[in-house]
Image (tube, rainbow, N blue to C red):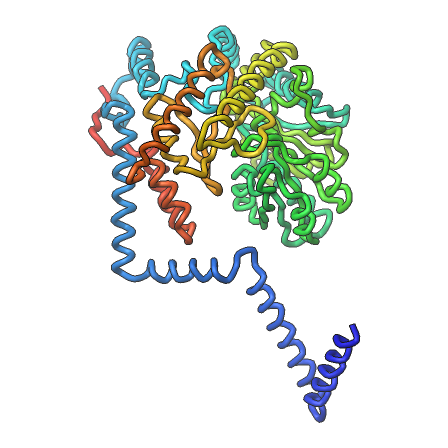
Amino acid sequence: MEIAEMYLVRLQEHVNSLCTGMPAWEIVLKTAATTVLLVWVKGFLFKDESLYERGKKTVFRLARRLPQVKNMIQKEINKMSDGLTHDLNEAIENTPYLVQLPKDGWSTEKIIEKATEYTKFGTFKWETGCASGTVYNGNKDLTDVMTQVYGLSAWTNPLHPDVFPGVRKMEAEVVRMCCSLFKGDRESCGCMTTGGTESIVMAVKAYRDYAINVRGIKKPEILVPVSAHAAFDKAAYLLAIGIKHVPLDPKSMKVDVHAMKKMINKRTCMLAVSAPQFPHGVIDPVDEVGALGEQYNIPVHVDACLGGFLIPFMEEAGYPLPPFDFRVKGVTSISADTHKYGYAPKGSSVIMYRNSSWRHHQFFVTPDWPGGIYATATIGGSRSGGIVAACWAALVYHGHQGYVEYTTKIIQTAKKIEEGCSKIPGIFVYGKPDVSVVALGSNEFNIYILSDRMTKRGWNLNALQFPSSIHLAVTVLHTHPGVADRFISDVTEISEDIIKNPPKDAGGSAAMYGMAQSIPDRSLVGELAWCYLDAMYSTQQKSTKAD
């Protein structure tokens, strides 16, 4: 301590000697300039990425500007684009596209015939339980009920509650039933949205507006786990706010709460946790992050989009969990997808708040439009009343006990798959799955090779990255007799063969994900993803005028 003080005194004497005889304005100007320079240097040296990583990116970006490199990359992008278009066309058996309206309208018979033909395209038979997530139920009776209720309300629009009061009542009941599930009191409230992404965007919008309008934060930012859904990144991008990603505990795969605490600053407007997170199926420590929110007066959002209709029933199913809902004091909002384990049609989710003061910041109102006072609760103006009604039908069709029974079967099956896969040589399970997702990795071979070979056996799994892994999201379809056993057996056989006969070259997703993770400039990965999105809407193939 004394040595440090001695050096500080010497530094002070040196600075004073430099300033002797210097005009006051020059001292002020140089002090200000030095301060600005030091702040810049600090910002440059202590960013989220290391100098080495930023250096690699800079070199890569500069190299891409060289004509030869630029042409080579564009050639590969075009090759990938053509390949994706080819694969998607193969999936529809290269049947021609309609590229303009039929001259005359089709008959009902022809429409049904064509629609039936379209829905039969594809090699994956999801009804057999081959797909991770994707279709969460598929029960025929439920499908018939939802279809009939949708038909009754196909022309309705929640934007006009005076014209369609029954649909308004259904939507209000869906929200209230969800708030009750998550232990909200009479003050809790929410809205229906078109899916988990919109629910998350709405929560981020509410907290951004609260930060700007109430707390006076000019440049708000949110803190989310590395494993949080990409919808948080989309929300930050769309709403022009900052986002910082908090690392995970490498063993549990849960968010590192200590690291999150260190990353909180005066601009932090929201803390997020997942229950569970998508990649590895573990639930973040909601109570600990909730306590952080209370300590620093920062709202906390629980993203339960994936497991929102499993976790409220797990205790009754015999699998109790730590508190994850409004019982945790710091939690101010929760998102839950009704179109996953709520078994409602795609396009339905719920965003819930502890009280209406938070929800008010989600709303959009423009009072001076010549068309009248315009106000919407979510992003959409006109919305499908049919989806609202079908969602309502799904909830009341199952009832509380129906969800408990399905939850029991799904968690039992997920535990069986977790236990079975953890015993397979060369395979390990990431973390300790809390709900329905089981993520697999390997220290002995490229896990994406396993994924590709599982695809050849009819499975459709989710490929993950950072770290390399794949997962299966267990649904009702996987609880059917023999499905879980077949999955464990196939993983066992393929893993054994890969270890005994290591492939020389990795193709398919193994090559693609290996390349994607090694590219330092992530913008190039984004351009490769554009190829896929472009191909989704491509009709470049044999096209025909409609008859």
